Length: 283
Image: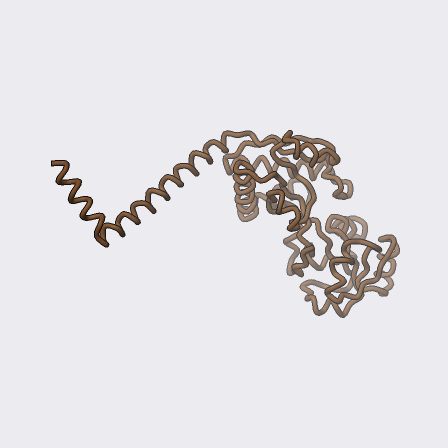
């Protein structure tokens, strides 16, 4: 009985229809087992506690006296994302000079640091999306947003002398006036000798809101991809961490949770300036 059945199956699978059916069966089984393996790994990773280290004040970022508020915001955001995405994390505070050394040694799964998504970093590490942009913006007294790159090229922009900002933007043909101090730059801006100043977002926000009583406006969003993000060695569990964090961050921004946490801690969102633009200048 079984011998006859086996013979019939051999004949069927030797036909063109049988070969196609076999191919589809193998593809289905491959996808099924891959799905099962992925699900098992994901369940395993969701039980893992990821140790994420960061500097107590996110050095070298200049938080302009808002250190405690910023650390509290980051902590709330991370644990909210972890809760939503069903991942387990533990944030640990250590000095900046030990972050990468201990990460390489395997003391932590990941770190949070100020970094640009350069190719050299991506070759070695997994980088999350930035959860807070801190790149340079343009501050002006008379110019308003939105402003185009072509319009900026007709203006004189003050920059810090020997800064990376000048290095990044010089190839774009922007006329730049170097300054040794912001005091001199703002004095020239006030006198109309320059049209805008390029400075990091957090400094710009402080000057425009606290020191100038609204006299100066931020007219662009951050002009580079520099920001705070998770950095982790390349492996499967860390890929899970980065993927889930990015999903959670995107959802937190879409749902309003991100902005609510910023407001809770007295911070502002650098990428939602009304009618502002990003010139897509990436170092």
